[in-house]
Length: 219
Figure 1 (cartoon, rainbow, N blue to C red):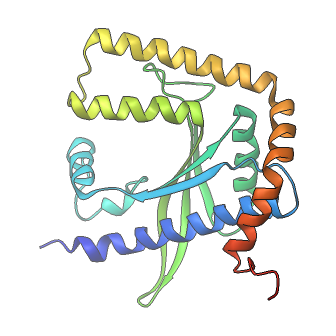
Figure 2 (cartoon, rainbow, N blue to C red; figure 1 turned 135 degrees about the vertical axis):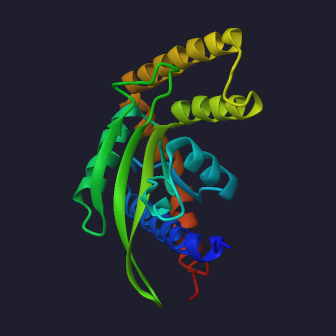
């Protein structure tokens, strides 16, 4: 029997470490009173049924499952399209992992309307069994891109990948509208950022203090 728990443990560790590190980047910006290009970070390890389905589709076997690039997945959410490129530069400068491939689905969106920027990395981890390199995928998306992609994913699941043409057409139209929304928000980016810094700074400071266990002023 294939030991799924043992196989997936390094990917669970990878997701956990990357989430902490990238959330730490956001915290550093906020501590300095700066606008953070990272809005929030999520992560997941691919489900077993999804792994098996993709393996059958792409010809993976138990012997080369580790070559699958998205077993460990991190999603970095940003507010503006320009933030995507800022986050990308942050990733390119990091020394704790190696970027092996980039896929730009923002300037080269898929026919469905899907937009996102994918970064495939090799991430080193230490385990009690020794040093290991794990593949992981980091997706950088605006909130609008993520909303659209989440809806498309749900519909693909509902229809088994065969979305009816009328629904598909509506999705394509919605993708154009989401792109337009990103463009419009980009035009007033500076005003939005200034407003958010003024409005959010007191709460951000309080949140950081709570995270660091410093909420008691008498400590």
